[in-house]
Length: 300
Image (tube, rainbow, N blue to C red; front, side, top):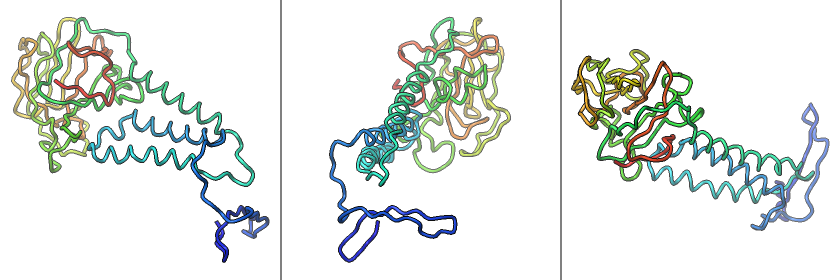
């Protein structure tokens, strides 16, 4: 943009390796911001590229883990970005036309990926649906779904795992402070999701400071239940709350302990997965239909 005594105009310049001006083109007449109007094909491509970026951000849960007020502010930027892409002035040489291909391909690719990842199934089923182990709350699936939406998928036995956090009425995970008990899910009662025998239980690992990672032991305080057909693992429990020991027989709905922040975890949450022969299984819960993908909210 060149500012002169009579106003502003658009300028397009070129320079050589020595940074000497070799070409200068000025747009005729004073510059006037373009009015909102139906754009040329290239503008449609620009808008679709921006839309693909926002769809990917929303679908992969970047905003969903934020407090609702902050999330809404981020999402409000979407229409602003789309309008900005719509209003972009064309370069002097015009568009190359690639946006007409890039925009639709990107948007279709992102949408297709998210549908596939959210509906992804491994094809290995539980022998019977589990009971959801948390009650009387609103729960957000922070990790779940297929590759790209679930960071457990590189580990064969955990490929169908979910991580669950608690959220309040406005989508807030934290009450206040930065300690483990600042998270809404901390201390939530945890109930057995199935009948079976306890093959491993731990109760004496301390909670760790949120935001740090301690890699060993990965599950921290935990309860592993053998149903006779699969192994169901619940991890990151609160120290001193586990009510069962190895060798106990448990019934679905029996109190096992409370959610904590022990083991390999950056914040208080519940980890749950089922496996058979070292391979993770697709989870199913009684009374819950649909996919268990990252970003889904469950109310119990």
